[in-house]
Image (tube, rainbow, N blue to C red; front, top):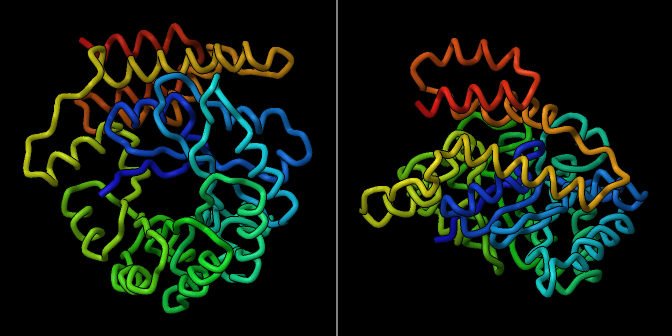
Length: 325
């Protein structure tokens, strides 16, 4: 069984992917990369496709609704190299994001209702790269409307190398019961590997997902406060105690240093682009990412109040230092 980090907008940047790789993830995914923005020359979009040393294998996830644009994005992602190494090992098409702004653009979960378009998009991507192309999608638009079987057929006919299925419907967003029975049916029909996704946080969650026959499990929000969840669940699956966390300074301090190193890398590689200052990136990520590390910590309410006021790297460092004591 492989353990994968799910692609999540604003979360799965290089720093967090590196944390999860060190925490046992076998493969991580970029944030969603807009094929349209890339096609029209958006330099900030390229920032999402940057990796940093120590990450391990990374897949690039693309979202789009036009064949020409997704093919261009697949070619661009495939051509990226870091030294003599290709940057990505897989290109993935998002056909499952339920966020309204993504759906309004005809992308993400909007595609679960249009298997024909999914076939054409995947076909264009497969023709544009020699890397494996996969599909990430959902069971269907609403409970009982299981378009996933048509989507599986589209993926297989297009030459996709795998399919990742969030075992919920678009209408459920990120909550509600998982359709393990439907997922098991997908696995039984599939000629390509199937990865299961959806609210995996415990060994029991992994067991329920693995009973469907999936080859891999994908973890998203469960890794926010615990990027070593992958190693822990692997150990629990073998009946072993969880291994010690790999970060001597703790996950929060390490994550901050990785984030700052990645910010410096972006500034050096894109000298003409706007890259957030250290103060800005530390405070923004403190509100979106680091806050998860404080869940369940004694005095968490007071810490959250402090977090709401942070605006500088010095303030962030002070909070991190206080938590290490």
